Length: 366
Image (spheres, helix red, strand yellow):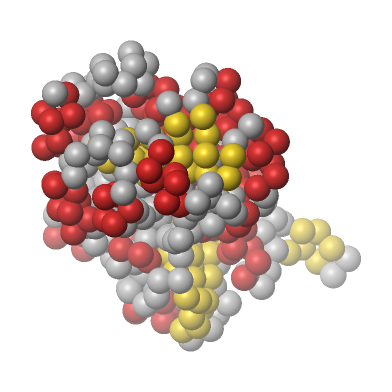
């Protein structure tokens, strides 16, 4: 079979890296990709050709490939030019990109979005959200350290002792836990908040203090994500976060609810009351933001508080993001085609969750 790789027009991340190209070829796949497919991630074309892949035009790839790997976007016109029954895999954000999903009902191709992979043990190796969130959590702390005007660790100098930075992390999912771990490695004093009591031990194991409001609502069916809370809980939560934010030098927010507006955690009043020189990194800015004043893909200053809104911090590490993303794709394809192209596991939870055009199952099976 032929694996075709399209160059991303929306991010620097490549769906394939040379080491993974070698793996595909070792398992008898032919690999073809567009010119400069990995150039923004520091993988030049020669690194792919040396691995055994070949460079082709977009038109040739769409026409020839049995499996097409892309990043966050593929146009309807591109899909029309692919083989019938072709498998197309990317991360298409279907919970908010509903128009794209609706456009797939008339196509006899299988479109998989790996940002819908369930958070189960068997799916861990395919979980692109966890892979990229971990990088984003790390980058959030590095970005904060660059913007903060003081030290992260306690420093003893001839002029006296400099106290460590105080970091507040809101949301202790994959990104939040990585942010906690990174801030602790840099020597900061860290507090963390999450509505899910199950993460308390993980937070504490990383050396951070877990702060909480009693009475949070949790849903085991939410796949490890947070769920919408009651009005009373939200009121108490805002009060607690307001108090802790005033004591913090740096606040990193990571709270997201899939398919919904991000919960508001840092109000305008809180920002205006924070210490001069404080830094806020809002990693939920693309879905409305955890901070009332944050703007997506912008850094702004409010009363000497610096607020950076960036939901794609992992893109600032495109080489490693590409390695992780392409590995997730490879693991998914290995799982999907374990029994061959004619025996895809349509009844498996992973396929049911990630396949966007479910109505095509019958026609493809025929």
